[in-house]
Length: 114
Image (cartoon, rainbow, N blue to C red; front, top):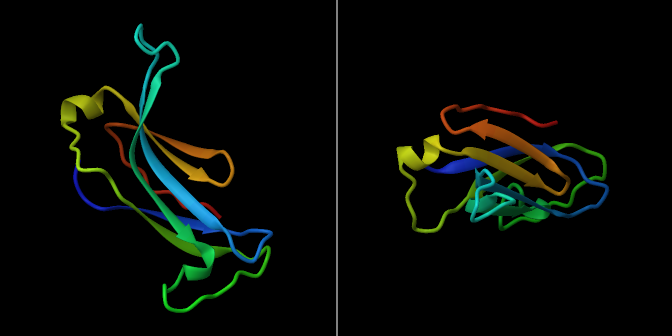
């Protein structure tokens, strides 16, 4: 698996500023070594709402208004081969909140939240 990963998020908040984070997690099922399973953080990123358009110009949010956000995910210097990927499921977790998207390792999807 290679390439840049970004999350396109459409969100609102009751606050004028907030942080949104996203993670790409490799989820392993329960096994004798890890009875509860294991979640390996592959990539993550964060965006502060006031800097959603530019780091040079701050724009506070209007509570309740939906805005688009782009969250770039950054990974440690590791690689993931096809054998590892086919044995697990990837989960993109978006916070705040408890929304997560399950993506089988051999599939790709495009989603829009709004």
